[in-house]
Image (cartoon, rainbow, N blue to C red; front, top):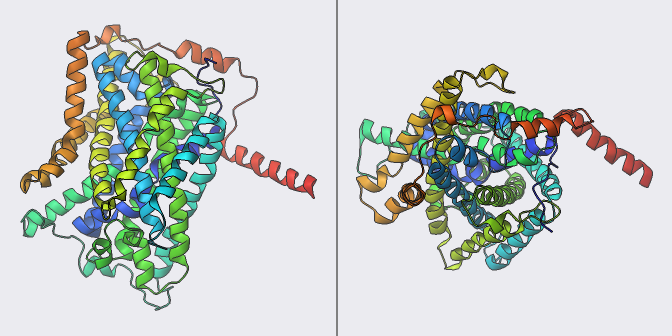
Length: 523
């Protein structure tokens, strides 16, 4: 049957799906690269600064996304308000970004499993992951939303458990009764010298800060996932607005606090951070637990880390499918990809997405897991930066259109703060990071690393230029930009709803109440 995307996601599911996309391998394992390269102070500065920039970009996306909660999110907005070629480039960049994250997470899952045993068959793990992602995403959006709700809840529990571990152990609550506090900020020091490019002294410390910024650029994400679920929210204006508002809290709790904790629990020169490559033992928290002689907790941490990584891969599968669907809706991908089952699943788009997890089989060549992770990490980081640059540029065009057309932004369901300056800052910062992210591969010339970091940039230039030349597209004049777009149909849909919107905690209360009643009736 030819169906369409359906609005089935409630408030609690949207909130946890947004968390699911922002918490993954990077926050628990890959964050160590920023610590080893720059030290605890550089890590904290980088994550704090980049989180503030991302808060501004979220501010841009919130205003546009609440006004127009459309399928494809910012991808379609880029084509609608900037240039069709810009939307084409943005869509395929985001699709590849999300699709490549799936094998990255599956590879990381195998690596984390090696914490317990080295003989777990990687092919079996890959096949099971692909099968589970298929089941959770193809059955129905409701099944996906419910699964992601519980999986993301495990991520939050893990994070707060690690924050508690940091606070308790630094105050002396550990088997060695060592109140180490901020010791590692003094010895070996707050700033590390990144010497891989031959630099020394202040230059090496500055390059260490750059390394921490690259780590933050890979780790700190969030608003793009809310944009992807907006078209399937039961009450898009209310629930999506709430989701965007909570992103600011997530930046502070998840990313800035994580950077602070990681710099406290382990010194940046600990051999475990580099000696184990990308293994689970390379997680700063697990290393700290082992250093303090803590038993059992490392096993629990890695068990919860597995659910976190699996959940992230599940979210990326969903987002990649919806982005490809959005491309097809606007004619930037084959029209057949808009075909949906009666449950609202774009099944052909999903089938294309499920080709990408097969890249995780590349890790099977002996010690190549770390190489696969490194290559995917570089490609993904470049793609992620382009995503946020696209959002910032799109908002600048959107804001300009409101001014030229005399539209009162206060009449929108959500009005961003400090605009258009958040958009301007986002454009400048993301452009600089995109241009200099491969600085190390240029300073000490490395062809593989150069193309790893800049492939997505080159691909973006090619797709934008190619589509523009073939279709002779033009930048959308501010006076002609369609700011109304799908708003009338969204308002009509919401006006027809009978039940009032429910809050996150109200829905949680209902969920607990339902489960209590079921348990009582079964008893």
